[in-house]
Image 1 (cartoon, rainbow, N blue to C red):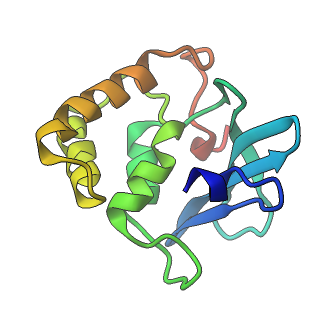
Image 2: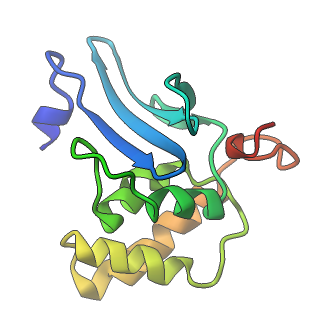
Length: 152
């Protein structure tokens, strides 16, 4: 899989559109000497996109709150050329999470998604705890800034 995702001849992209709201496109940017992953926000009802988060060794940009993330993951648009599986959608956009205050059920939700895509059940909960801990404790931006989905 990594050979495909990181092949300089291709730029794999995964569409995660949301029904009636904003969606996300994940692009593996495979330029020689300029590899990265870009998360592009697709505003609701618009054709334009804007880069919200980028990964080039570490994440930078303005991420999403847990509620915004779940809003995208739980509301797939009826599009054949997009990721429509709920577990895959959640895990694909999980790196966008920048909310330090996640609800109590978040670990169980991510654990269930990991198991659904083939992670061993006996390690899924511990993996979910680790992922959410790493995502919510890293510095992103001033905590007073609002989510890019809020319109500000």
